Amino acid sequence: MARRNGSGTSRRTTMQSQWPLGAVWRQVRRTLMGQPGMALLLVLVTVLVGGGLGLAEANMRQSAFDYQSRLTASGQYVLKASARTETGEGLLSAAACAGLNWVPGVKTATGFASGVATYLSATIAKAPGEYMSVQHVVGDFAPMLDPSFASRFDDGVYIDAALAGRIGIAEGMRIGLTTSGTGGEASTRTVTAHLLDMSARKFNESQVLYAAGPTTGTVGECLVEFEPGAYSDDSRKMVAAALDDGRTIVSITPFLAGDTNAVPPLEQYRGRISRWFWLASGLVCFLALFMPLVFRRHEFALYRSVGAGANPTALIHAISGALILLVGHVAGFLWMILIFAWTHRSLPDMIGTLAMTAGASFCVALALTTIGCMALARGNMASFIQKRL
Image (cartoon, rainbow, N blue to C red; front, top):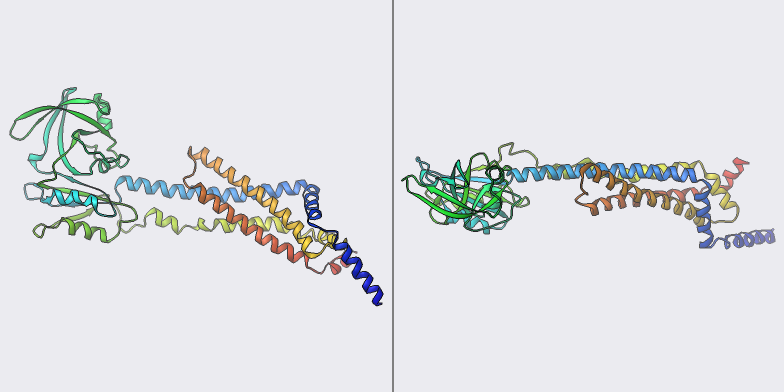
């Protein structure tokens, strides 16, 4: 009896020694090629699940960022400080307003001169029938007038692009500008025209030309724009403290009308349900891959009956599943990028983050599939074979 057990052990050891890593790879290829239709179907399911959920996440991300960009361009992070006399003269220090540009967290600050004497009637020699006015501003005013414009300080005048196009003025053109004050005195000078798209913050609603003024005297309004991450409830206090001279009551209001208690789009995006799509994708891909294996337990029994151990048997099916998941997730990611580019006419802003999401889905599905294969390979194969017989 002992001899028979020893012979059986020797025979089993000899058979298991015939399963080196090369044999495992051959069996992986045979497993995939033996059922090409099922393998292709599983790849297709992985592509649709991973790519579809990834596309939904990319669309939600892009919508949130686009909405945030529109709000930022409209002036969501802009505060308006104002203080005037009964006659409309400004009471805010022009130097203090311009100095806010060097405060950490402030993107740009602009002061607008106010009062009857500060608005100068203007005409342009190229368009004598157009009646305009010139308003002097201080600080970094170009990005305030046009959020897409970079900072620029010079002696030119800034005009809305739509108005400039209507009267035939191009960027950098030298134009003759005639201005007249309240006293009736007129002066003509040649200045450089700079074009801005002032429609985002409604500075294009009147035919006003903006020119840089001296940082002396006073202004009636001071617009302060903060970086999105620096805007908080303390921003209002900071602006009021910087402009308050102890004698003037400064009114601080949001530039953009709306619900001040509304949650910003980026905050809403951080609490989105789609942040768990990578987990849902991994679970669905695992179930799609694992359920057919439950009904193919005879393959596990067959490998065990010809001498393969539990580990080689589990490794064969785990590697097969890993290849299917890898091809499916890569194809799904590329499909998602193509669909997004076709619908939005541009690539996603954060391709790396979307790739990491697809990678997380792949890792979840692979880990669960490996655990499932190990559980199936270590089942009671003898009892399963006996039932089949």
